[in-house]
Image (tube, rainbow, N blue to C red; front, side):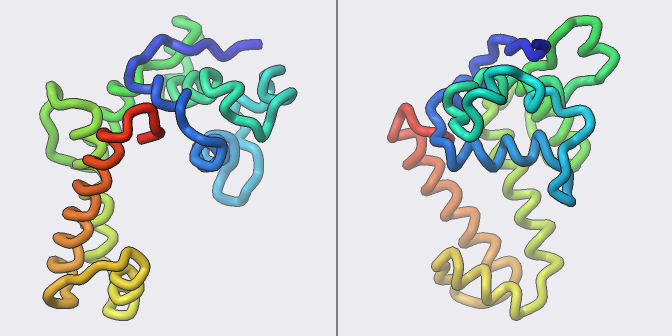
Length: 173
């Protein structure tokens, strides 16, 4: 039908993600907060999607194309007939979220900075009970149960997991 994947080295990793990982992205791209189909979702109209859903690995390229389209301007997408590169989307999100980053940084570094900013904002809004749940769920061992100590532990955990993900090439990020 209409989705066209713009070759994008920053989205090729989707090809290696399992269906469980892709399911989260597909749900976000195709459904609103109420679980209803998004009006502008093109993915659900694609023949490949209809044939293979929920085997997302068989149409990972269409998922990437939907993400690229979702991140672009609708009018501009119509003219260029495809969305924008993931890096451009990520830069726009980082700017909107007021994340400190360098435009020349790797996509992975920008993603990490964005994740840490989201975590920091979330943790700063948590009460002690919510903070305790985070510590328990992520099996953290902070010296103190303060927002700053928990955030520091989460940052260490993210960096360790990121290192593991890159050392196990061929896996979803």
